[in-house]
Structure formats: C-alpha cells, structure tokens
Length: 289
Image (tube, rainbow, N blue to C red; front, side, top):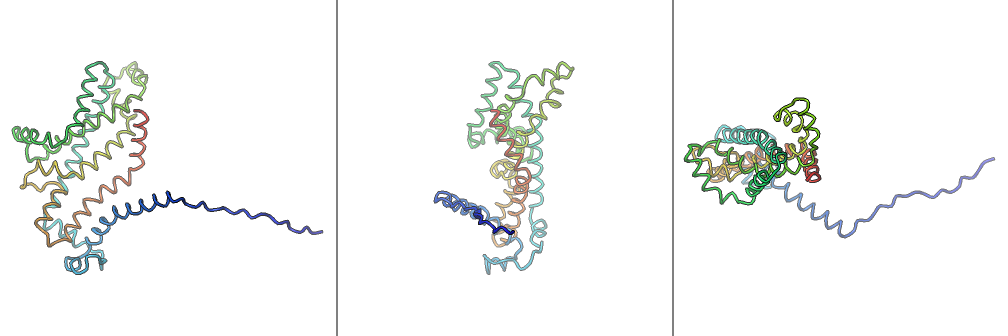
C-alpha cells in the first residue's frame, strides 16, 4: 500500500526589502569609501609608474610592479633620514607617555583630596588651549635651553600635548578599578611602585591599547609640530619631507606618490591589526567613565 505524498508547503525565505532610508545610507557610505580609498589607490598605482607614463596618461595603469621608484626615493632624497626621524619621535614619545601618564593618572585618582582635583583640572585645561597659542612660548623656551631643531624638542612638545588627553582617558578608566585589589597587594608587602606595575597596570591594558593606537597614528601623521621645531637644515619627518618634495621635485611625481604610500602604509597596517583592541579599549573606557 502506497501513500500518496502530501503536498508540503514550501518554506521560502522572503528577502527583506531595503527601505529608502537604508538605500540612502548605503549610497552615502559607498561614496565616502570611494572618496577615501581613491586617492590612496591612485598614489599606489602611480608609485609603480615612470614620470613619462604619469604625464602621458595620469589615469592609466602601471605596466609592471617594479620597485625602481622606491629605490630612487631613498637614493636621491632625504626620505630615509626623515623616516628614521619619524620612527624615533613616535617610539620615543610613546615610551615616555606609557612610563608617565598611567602612573600619574593613578596617583591623581588614588590620592584624592582637593589638590588632586586641581591637578586633574590643570591637565584638562591643557586640552582647551590650542597649540597655536602655545607655539611661540614653546619655541622660545626650546631655543633658550638649546633644544630647538632637535628631535628631543619635538618629543617633549608631543609629550606635553598628549599627556592631558592620556590623563583624561586613564582617570576615567581607573575609577572602575577596585581598590581592594591594591589593598590586598599592600597587605602582601608590595610597595606602591610594585603594586602599580604588577597589579594595576595589567588591568589597564584595554585603555592602554586604545591610547597607544591613537597617539601612534597622531605622532606618525603629524606635520605642524616637526615643521615648526625642526629647521630647514634637518630632514624633518616623512610628512615634512613630502611637503618639501612637492616644492623641489614638482617634475618627479612618481617619487612623491611613492613617498606618500610609504607614509600611509604603516598607519593603515597598525589600525587594521589592532582595530579590535582599539574599539574594546574605547568602549570599556566609556563604560568605566
């Protein structure tokens, strides 16, 4: 005896139609992505082309992926020295920031009292003063102590500017760190420094990762401070070197595009590699604050 198969209703997944608002948002995002990525892609393609190819067809594609322009960039310009200067400034400033700012913020939060509040407000006030207002006094001070046109002057200026933001970020996070953990360490005989670096600082890693990424990108891409505090005899940083190439090597656009790509790539790689830590640190910091 056979049973005739019963008709089963077909389960069809109906696709949800996009609303007009969602379509508009996607269109705007597509335009923004194109506007941001096109200059980078254009510079990348032209970094593999010769001057003759660029001037003949600015929108053309490279015929090969040779590294001749990259070799010439380091052989015929000061870009290599500028790249080294940028690495020293970025690395030196980050090391000093991590050695000073987290501990300073911890001291402000844990000492308490009116004096700590005034110190905190003093740091926050630094965020409200534009660099252009402080520029002339800083240049004069660096010149008087013999640090003008040195990498040390650029590092110190960056350190002073970034410390205020770091204090604000770390203080809001440290408020959520339980005091009982520190008290337990002190009962076990740990001193203040050991308590901070062994117990407290590891708990600050989420906000530290966000702070490092923000400052690393800012330091690497900065143009104005090195331009002001490093004179023309210095190679400057990569962005300063690029600005000088535009004025001195206007006929060698292939080198300008090559230098621009080398300046962009580290920032893109850094943010792409540590994006999740950055988002996690900022979101946790917002909740803690």
